[in-house]
Image 1 (cartoon, rainbow, N blue to C red):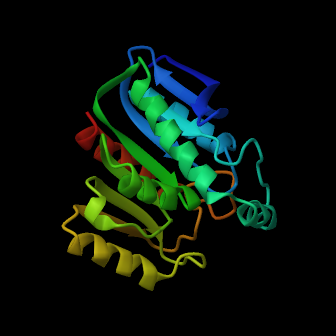
Image 2 (image 1 turned 45 degrees about the vertical axis):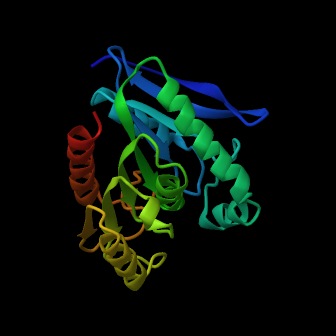
Length: 224
């Protein structure tokens, strides 16, 4: 499938944000991609391309304002100076931009988040639930008012994760189910945090392939 992709600008309050847009020539359902704390690195752009090759219009806003961390230490420094209000505004604006894109088809969109981006994906499902149909979370967790969440949720988690405690993931799933949400979580044996990301030493090809296939099937079923 032929795709088009480029960095684009979109309005965020009285400023411009930037993001990576990938779409098939025929257009398709929309998926909002929220990157991990590293920033909008090549992996997330390539992931948007992969989604476009599967028939989705994928948009990944840059939540780090152009900065990319190559190490955990650098990423932690970026987190320390993060303005959560500004990041939330960018996520909202990116969602609006994707919904308004002329190539996007369907009534609703999906959201996919990685680590920090997973927390923001979950937050978006609560603070801006309109026209969101499905959320895929990769090795990330967060807190939200689940009574406001309307999406179906799929989560992919590492068995040996030093960044997200099993107890926290299990408690989050329990709270989601108690709120009446449709939730499916998968745990991948012998994996670590960031197991999806090919440029990370934690990358696990087998787990990444299976998680990708599950996420695609989930979106194709629920985002139309």
